[in-house]
Length: 109
Length: 118
Image (tube, rainbow over all chains, first blue to last red; front, side, top):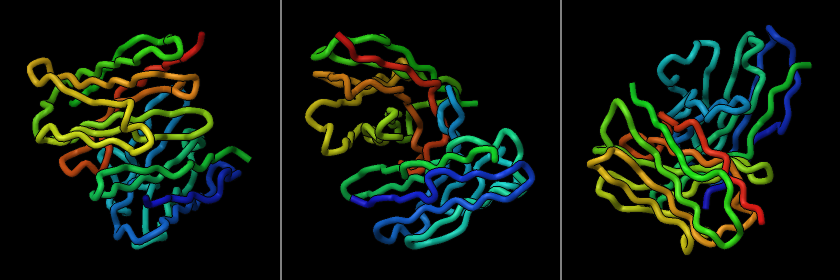
């Protein structure tokens, strides 16, 4: 089973700053990585798929990069609504399974 | 616009069976993967299983003996069943569409908090 490790667990920044969130896979997953944002009381929202493609309606300040085992979600010029939890996710096809990272909490400094 | 609306009991006793329904509006079940995921305080997001376009299901090994996913295409609904629940199954449960490849979860239900307590 592929394990996704997200760092840091918590990131403290101020509005207007840029955030860099990391996700490392235990083995190569090419670019089959997605990022989600989850706010309290809401379901996760797809932000990025295929490591770098923004989902429909996602602001341009969200960007993703990486391939193989190391991936990054960058949020430029943080808005107050961006301070919440972010998860990375991948899929295996044999056997079929989906795994998530343990999450990074982005908090206001 | 695709919308997923889910419902089911919010409180169960240990050893009971959890049954949730997810109705899909604004789109068809056909041609997509459909997943169930839960969020619990101690474990983060956990994948519970999927049904693919051919009705074939897949589950994580840790839950395989207790979980099942099914669908009723005539009603555009998918179902989750989890048997012999314990307090460790207390979580918010979500249905989600897994796209055409089963990879990206692009639409989600609103979530159901299920509490297991005697």
